[in-house]
Amino acid sequence: MGMSFNAYYSADMVRNLPDDGKRYETVYGELLVTPAPNAWHQELCRRLSVSLSGYLTIENVGKVFCSPADISWSEDVLVQPDVFVVDADQARTYDWAEMTKLRLVIEVLSPSSRKSDRFAKRKLYQAVGVPLYWVVDPEAELVEIWTPDVRFPEVGADTVIWAPSGASKPFELDLKTLFER
Image 1 (cartoon, rainbow, N blue to C red):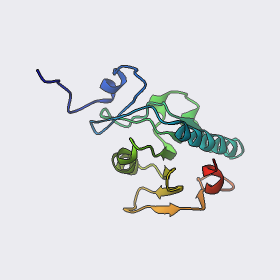
Image 2 (cartoon, one colour):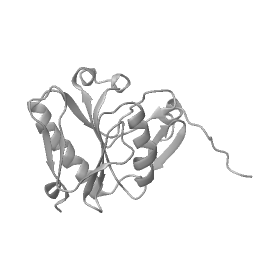
Image 3 (tube, rainbow, N blue to C red):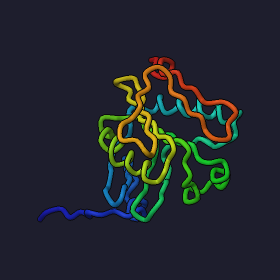
Image 4 (cartoon, rainbow, N blue to C red):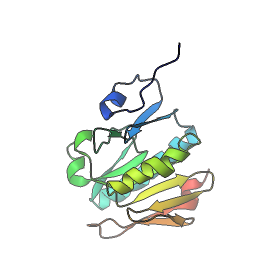
C-alpha cells in the first residue's frame, strides 16, 4: 500500500501538523518542509534581530520578530520568516493574524531552504507587496535585495541599507560584521 498525502495544504492544515521540530509552511497550497536550522543560521538570525531591535528602539517605525511565527495573507498561505519587521500599529496587537503589513522580511539560506526562499517565498513576498526582502547567503557572505517590482535582485556584498518611511535615518548593516565567525 502506498502512502497517501495531500497535494494542497491550507494554512489551517499546516497549523495542525505535528510539532516534530521541522518547519512547515504553505505557499499557495504548496507544502514547504525544512528541518531545524543549524547553529550558524540561528546565530545570523540572532545578530540580525539584535541589530534591527536596537535600530527600531530609536526609530519607532516597527517591531522585529523572529521565527517561529504564523504569517498569513490567505487561506493557502502560512509562512515563518526567519526575521521580519512588522508595522508598529500591527505589532502592538501581538496577534499573528493581525500582522500582515511586513516592512522588511529576511530569510537566511540553509541547504534545505535555498529553493523555497529564493523562489516560492520570494514570489509570495513580492505579490503581497512586502517592500523589502533580503535573502542572506551565509556561504557567499552576501545579501540579495528584492523589492516587489524587480525580476533580479540587487546584491549587497559590503553594506545593506533599509530606509523605512517614517524613520529619521536609515538602518545600515555591515556584512563583514554580520558574517564574522
